[in-house]
Length: 304
Image 1: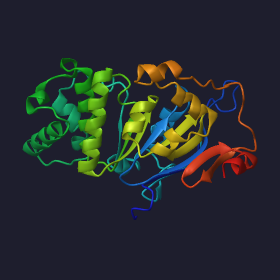
Image 2 (image 1 turned 120 degrees about the vertical axis):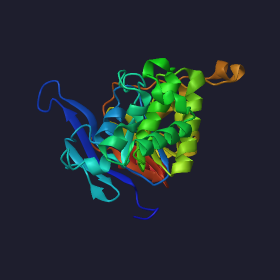
Image 3 (image 1 turned 90 degrees about the vertical axis):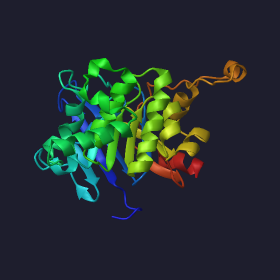
Image 4 (image 1 turned 180 degrees about the vertical axis):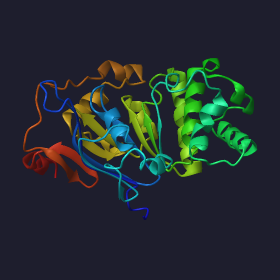
């Protein structure tokens, strides 16, 4: 695999629930995208857009209804649970709620070392302790924190523990599922900065799932926008923010508050008409280099 090859490639992924029943839900409805080594792809959208389901499909917490997920060139979408063990050490997930995702009855050292123990990555207790302490330092916590329980920490500290746990098995790819949405605004930037620092040190690739567009802009190289199970727009971060093409993207960006009070007064919110369904002749296509839009061929001509 070269730098130009994607580390993750998602092809025509579908995740339907209650298939064939009146209450069938098309949570993820035929999406395709690539993630390249060392980059952060931001995946944004409102609640129910399918972004978290996409992340859980990639790491195989769900079995996809259809489609293919390739990791480093290998198709993992049909692998059985036991076969996934090798890949689980190479891809990890950071969850939204840092308290719910940590076992309250386990000490921090055991939470962080869980992956080390399962994958037999340390030979003895001394080696285990050393690795746990290394990971605590990496996320800006202290060695003495190892003997404490999750309830003794703040939300931001708990999320750092979750990050340390994900890093324990030395993964190449991390799915961060709304990792800052449960945290105070003052702590969010600290966690994002920490994730960026760790990405540089460890050479990691991220899928950063969120609904907060301001934070996604700060951490992402490219951004994909999801709506009703489909990716409606995808582009480099600056391109997407400066030239949003899809009405849904424009609506999301217009809802981001402007820090300048004078500009905020003149700031207009763009409303998106949720009653209009997708059309049969629309699909995700590249309308300008690197800028993808869910549209018809006729609509694409206008942008090209």
